[in-house]
Image (cartoon, rainbow, N blue to C red; front, side):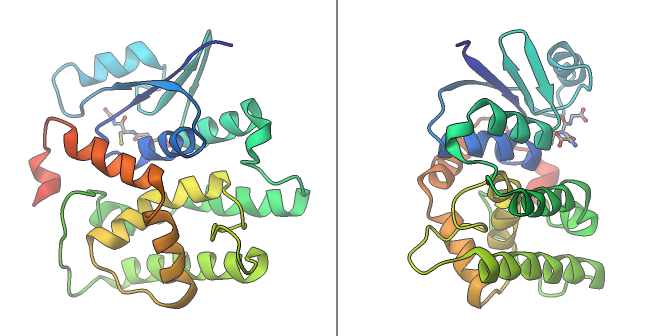
Length: 219
Ligand SMILES: N[C@@H](CCC(=O)N[C@@H](CS)C(=O)NCC(=O)O)C(=O)O
């Protein structure tokens, strides 16, 4: 088996990068990490040398190159079928894919204004209506999943056990912590489930150790 290499952007800021990184960490899959810092003069050329899209993340598995965070998560689910990253049941699998794609393609207002930054705490007393709507929808997704698939004593993931959907929502968990967004009930419990995972702690530590702050995101 070839060694996996995951090319990512700054761990503290690149929400796209964290999704496949989180799967590899949480599942204990060995990989080599290559970080390409954003906003450097050579960033575009360096990223283009890794993938035709010129964006991070990129996964390299021998001669196979996969880009787009969700495509990488799907690839990892196929490459490591024993990890159960996609449920065996077709209807549940479709639900995993629906909410994963909803995250990948949506929530623009929240993503733009509440930029991911796990090392700071920012108080935003008033949020625009479109951002509040994004958060309301995310809470609805999480609560619906836990209501339908959660069982007493399970691991607390959206579908009971860890799937690619949990990885897709890790950056949201981080944002809701950074911006001190109040949650309650099943949504708060889910945020705590993710926050307390060893993989989450490992990511925070890696991000804190990373050189190079991006001032426009730290304000
Ligand atoms: N839809 C892509 C988005 C990837 C993306 O925009 N990555 C950013 C880093 S967070 C990037 O590579 N930016 C570098 C650039 O645009 O020059 C994915 O899911 O992977």
